[in-house]
Structures are given as structure tokens and as C-alpha cells.
Image (cartoon, rainbow, N blue to C red):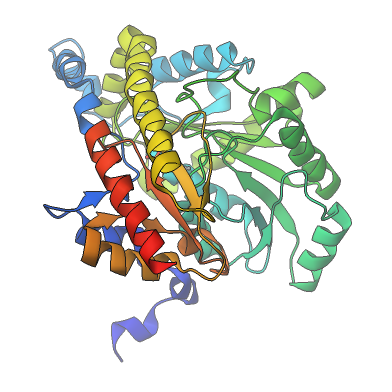
Length: 403
Ligand code: PMP
């Protein structure tokens, strides 16, 4: 019997990410790509990391840096994160924090923690496709989380029961979401908390882009709002997932989870079973760099990306034909474009590559049921203002020609 025929049932829902497949095609010379949602490598604080790794490998600490370490994560880093969380009104102990290998690992663990087959995960429509990829192997049913939506908790619960499970969590990225760039306002966040209370389920708050705000006032995190209501982190149902990927470096794979202690304890057991701990030296380097330059570095990143965001919004205004609309993000890396209903983002991509050498991610893969095709995601993080102006002009031309 071929080994493929022996793979477990859960592998049936593990598909190659459309974006990854696409990126292979798009990262070719001559193509202006707004597809890759990755940080600009020119912004990595490489000198600071060179020093931090040298420091970690110095005779005094090399035996720590190169050794196994605890599954919870490097304590000085958890203390630094606790300090950051206090600044956003989530005071917590290091025992409320687990260091993960990127926030992507946290999403996998949270799927593993909560989802039995046929349980319901409420997600945005669209949502981060990497979250769908993380949850899929646990064989959930997806329900549509619409913030301030008209679907009652009773309806969600009844549907989940009919599907053979119950609603286990609502997952959302409330700040500058991937793929839409949109932010959920305070009322919307409160409505998610109220829905989760009524359903007695968890809230997974994906804060991957939270530090990248370019204008407007910060909205309290969902966890901060819940903590303000309940006064005790141990009573909170929100699980906050943070990441250093968009601020310092994605390649070092360091993220974190903040939650009530029993949740963290179970996740620690999962981490022990999965990979023991995240790379010790990477956590030490992130800690050193964060302690010395986090705020100033993030400000630099914000300045660069906000200029690119402005440039993209201005170019869209100038070059998009009537009938096309787009989001106006206050931060993050993405603009979400909606085409007239009859158009298909994937078909448009073929023509755009062919005729105008411009690339983006078709929106369909961000919908759990793949039901919406007339949208696309544009990323401005890696494009210079000149590339943006020229690329959006060409995108406008191909959209007009296809309409
Ligand atoms: N959440 C969102 C919304 C993301 O866009 C990403 C990265 N693209 C992640 C989580 C995972 O990031 P990381 O594992 O690098 O922290």
C-alpha cells in the first residue's frame, strides 16, 4: 500500500497554501508584486541582532544559549513581554505567558487545545488563511463571525449543535487584519466578548500587527477590555497571541501567548510534546534587542510603512475605475480591494501577470468556504513608493480592461 493511503484522515484538509505556491511564481524579476505579506528585510535591525547573538554566545552565557531550556520560554523575555502587556492595560505574570515559535505555532496549539472534529470555530469572512491552515487538521466546522453581526448566540449554538459539536472559540485579528487591513472598533470588540460570553467559548485575539499603527487612536485590545470588566486575568476567556515577526524579525520565530494560567499550563504541556521549547538563543537575542531598541525600532518601521500605505491609497484613488472599492487601513501591511461582483480575483491575476506584470493575492483563499471571489489583497510593506505608483497604475489599467 502506498504510504499516502495510510495518512491519517486529518491530512485531507492540509492543503498547500495557495499563497506560498503563488509566491514562487511571483518573486521573479520584472514583476511588481503586492502579493507577499512579509516585512521589508531592509528594516530588520541586523546590527542589533549581530551584537545580541555575539553577546549570547559570549563565554558567560553560551552554556545557556546553546542548551535546552524550559518549555514556558526564556524568563527574562517573558518578563519583558509582561512589561509590554502592562503598557496596554494587561498586567500579567510571566506565568501567564508562553513563548511560541511564532504566533503561527500558537494558532496550531489553540486548534489542538480546543477543537474536536465537528466543533465550530468562528472566524472572519475573510480571515487570515494561515489560521484556517492551522485549525484545519483538527477538523472543525467554520462559522461566520461577523462583528456587531445580526446572528445571535442562539443561532450560532444551534448551528454548531446541528453540525455535531459546539462553538469552541471566536478567532479574530482586531487590529489591521490580514487580509483586510481593517480594525475592529471598541464597540465591535465588546460585541465579540458578549457573543463569547453567551456562547461560553474562548476568544482568540491575534495581535500580530497590533504594534503597527500609523494613525488614529489605539483601540484597547480585546483582552484588555475583558480584563477591565472582570478585574482578574484568571477569569478571562480571551487568549492573546503576540509576535515579534512584524516588528523585529520573522525568521527567528518568536511569538507569545497571554492567557489565564490553566490555559498556559496546558499549552506548556503541548509545547513540551511538540518541540520542547523555542530556540533558546533566538529568545535571548530577541530579548536583548527588544530591551534596547524595541520602541525606537518600531517607530522607524511605522514611519516607512505609513508612507507606503499613504502612497498606495493615493495611487488607488487616482487609478482605480468606478465600481472598485478598497479599505483604508490605519496600520499593518494590507489593503483589501473589492471588485465588481461579477469579477474574479484569480482570473484577474492571470491577466495582470500576463499583460501588466503586476501581482497580488486573489481574495478567495481567505474565505473559509471559498465563496467570495471578487476581491484581492494588496500588500504595501515591501514596495517602494515608485513601485507602488507604477504598479497600481498598471493594476488599474488591467482592471478597467477586464471590467
Ligand atoms: N497572524 C497573522 C494575522 C499573520 O498575518 C501572521 C503572519 N503572516 C501570523 C499570525 C503568523 O506570524 P508568526 O508566526 O510569524 O508570528
